[in-house]
Image (cartoon, rainbow, N blue to C red; front, side, top):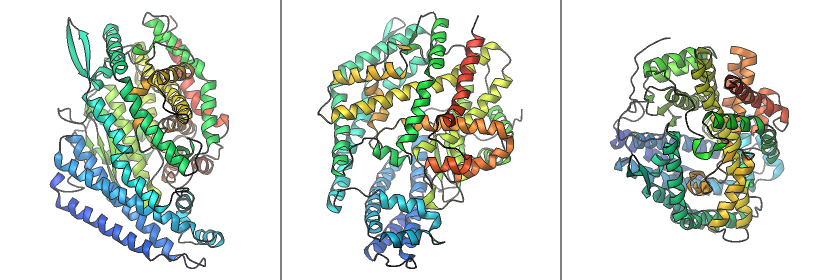
Length: 598
C-alpha cells in the first residue's frame, strides 16, 4: 500500500485569502449584488418574444441566472467551511446571514422570471428551445416555466417569501435551538451524568448493552416530557406547507418533493415495491444479529451496537494510499481526482477539539475545486466517511465543464456518487479481510446502511405521508403522532424491530427541515441507484468509468428517468432495474448468515 504524507489541514486561502476577513471574499459578495442588479434590469425590460429568432433575451436571462448561482455557491461553500472548522466564528456567521438574504432576494427574482417565461406563446417557446443557443438549457427552462407558483399573485408570493424567515423557517430554527439546549440525564457508573442529545444518541453504538438501553430509556423519557412542544412545531411546519400547497392548487403532498427530485411518482412507487418485496432477508439479518447478542429479537437500542470490534487501525497516510489504490482499479479519472484532492490540500481531517462534528463536502464551482471536512481518528469507519465525502467531491469534479444553470442536481442524485465510492472500498476491505471477525465487522456496517435505507427511511416516508393526510383535518396530537410513528416502524421493518422509539418523529431532524418536505426517499433512491450502477461497473470493468462520468455530468439537466434511459438504456419504472442493486444487498445478507451459521 502506498504511503505518502499529506497535510490533514485544508487550504482555504487558495479559494479566498484571509478567512472571514478576506478582501477577495468581500469583493466576491459585491460582485453577486451587481449580477443581481443586472438580472433585475433584464426582468424589467423583458418583452415576450414573438418569434423563434428573438431568443436573445431568454438566453441572457438564463446565463445571468447560471452565473449568479455559481457565485452564490462559491460564497456559501466558503462560509460553510469557515463554520465547520470553527462553529463559533462570529464573522462567518454574519456573512452567512448576509448570503441568506441575497439568496432570498434571488429566489424572488426567479419567481418573476418564471412568470415571464409563461407568457411566451407555446409555438414560439418550442421553436426557441430547438435553437442551437438554447438547446443545452431546454430542460431547466421548461422546469422554470412549468414550476410557476400556482394561483399565487406576485404580491402573495413576496408576502410568503418575506414571512418565511421569521415565521415558517423560524419553526425549523427553533427546533434546532431547542434540541441543542436539552440535556439528557443518564445514571452511569454509579452517578448521574449529563449529555447533549447528540451525545446520548451516540451511546447507541456503545459496546455495553446496559449503557445503550439506559440512553434509549432516558431519551424516551425526555421526548415524552417535551412531546407537546415538538408536536406544536411539527404541526406548524406541516400546516404552513399544506396552506401554501392548497393556495397553489396542490393536493398531493408528494407533488412538490417529486418535482424537486425530478422523478415521477411511478418511479418512486416501483422502488418501494421492490424494497418491500425483499424485506425478509434484512429481517433475517436483524434476527440473527439479535440472537448473537443474546436476545430473541432486535431491540431498537441494539441496532447500532458493534457486532465485532475491528482491530485494524489505519492512519490517514495509509488511508490515502488505500483509497488511491482501489479507486485506480475503477478508473484513471477517479484516481487522478483523488490524488489531486490529497496533494492540493482539499481535505480537513485533523483530530482536534472545537471543530464541527458533521462531515461535509463543499463545492467551489468557480475555481473547479471541492473541500472535504471530517475528523479522522484512525478507524475503518473514518475511511468510509472520507470516501463518502470524496464521492460527493468527485460528482462536483465530473460537472466541472457544465454551465451554471445545469450544475444543480436534485437530492435524489446527491447520494449516488458517495455511496458508489463507499462500495469500492467495502469490496476492497472484504477482499483484504483475513479473519471471520473482520469480515463480519465489514458486512455488519454494510447491512446497517441497507437496513437504514430500506427500513428506517421507509418508516419516515410512511409516517410523513400519514402525517400530511391527518393534518389536513386539523392538529395531530402528540399521542396520535406516537401511534402513527409506531405503526410506520412496524410496517417498514416488517415487525422485525422491538421496542422502537415511538418518538422518532420528535428527534429525527429531517421532519423539521423547512427547505424540503419528504427529506427521506431521495436518500433511499440515491443508495439503491448507486448499487445498480455498481453492479454495472462490476460487469463492464474500467470502461464503465466513462459512462459513469457522463451520467454524473448530466445529473443536473434531466429527469432521473431520462438519465437512466440515456446512460444505462434501462427503464427505472421496472422492478428488474432496481433488483440489480438489491441483489448486491441480499448477497451481503446471505454471506452474513453463512458466516454466522454456527
